[in-house]
Length: 436
Image (cartoon, helix red, strand yellow):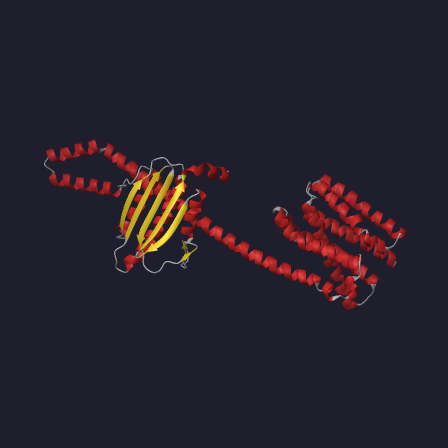
């Protein structure tokens, strides 16, 4: 009876590990695959039984990898067309078999019993444990299969190490049973190292992802705001054009008022027209429409905040640099300048912004010089801010400049903060190639 129970338990653990490994690598997603899989799995117990009765249990354990694991890896390779992840799936399933073994050992330790009792308990918990792992763990493991090979190797390292350790210390040698401390403590050591490694890795990865999300969110908001400003200012220009087109009608109305001696009415009409035109005015700083509209928009903001803003522009109408990047670059630089000047104005001091932007020999140059108070803090030549929500604009500027193989410098001289940068239009082709 004990012999049959041991053989049945070996068959059960083979099916348990095989089904789990196949589910981990999603090899049973088609009917054809399931038929092939179960036919092959049915042959393994037959071969196990022949070896079990011809030789002994120890020999069966020694050749178990060649009898079960290697054929299973090859089978899953054929069903999925992949080799690395089926290999890690088999290793992971083997590691999960330890759950089944340890839970049975715990029950036997509490209730008492021998080897036969251990086999019975293992058989009883096989199906519940298998269903639990399939339901809770399979989706997570399958998700990892979509990662890069490097990431797959990181997650598959622990099951592989355990597999080698288990066979080397229990099946092929008796090092584990000998109680050698360095052997007994090896797997706890690996667990500790793995825990620390994944803790550090996930922490670093999480920080990087959060930083990139913040930058992306900031860029999206800035692009959306810039495009809204461009649209609004373009509409203002169109409205101004319509006013110029309708000038003849306005003059006819004024002529009628004057002819009828309605002087006050003509004055009021002229005043209304002037107010509307003034509100819709867009100052022309340069030929480039996108840059001109952004500069005009921030000049209006500066005027509203009683900040003196002087602009010298000289860039052509068509640049190889995208309007989106140009808008984000100018918006961030001027937004930071106005933010610094607002603090200066709160102290009752005069605040100035001087902007120089021009293009020469396929290079776009920008300098923004603005008033500031306090002390500028730099890290690796880049200003940093402890204020919540600030500092992302500087990162955006640096990212865009680097994308166009440009250079940038940030400096603080007396009461002025200065940003200088240049972009190379020659690098635009490679930028677009990389983006594609």
